[in-house]
Amino acid sequence: MAQKLLKEQLLRHLHGGEAFKNVEDLLEDISYKKSGERPVGLPYSFYEVFYHMAYAQKDILNFCLAESYAMPSWPKDYWPAEKKAKTKEEWKSLVSEFFEDRKLLMAFIEDENTDLLQVVKHGEEQRVLRELMLVIEHNAYHTGQLAIILRLLGLI
Image (cartoon, rainbow, N blue to C red):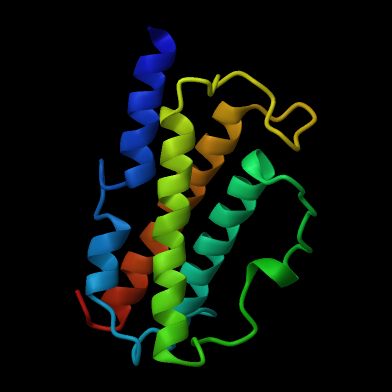
């Protein structure tokens, strides 16, 4: 029963928006054209932060579930080389992948065989609950940054 309640709470937080605007709503407020603008005084654009969120989420998903896993290079692999996606299609693909990976994480949580206290597939001591909380915490932190960027760009 406790696992079921924990899983329900994790799902709500992974989706986001419990205490703040969710990523879907923030993405509606930004255009591809504006996604690469860095507000004055900030060292990153909306695209750069969102890319980082998507990459980190995918990395944790792979750490938990992929058949093979190689640890990416920090910080090089986790941040894009450019401040904007090269094309609108690349931007749309990034957004789509973020939500597809989130769906896979949600399916992992919902799977009755997933024990939140088990060590993840490529972990040593890292447990499922820890990895899911990392995704939730990381996405929440950067969702706040996305909202600040939108505000500084005058979009919300």
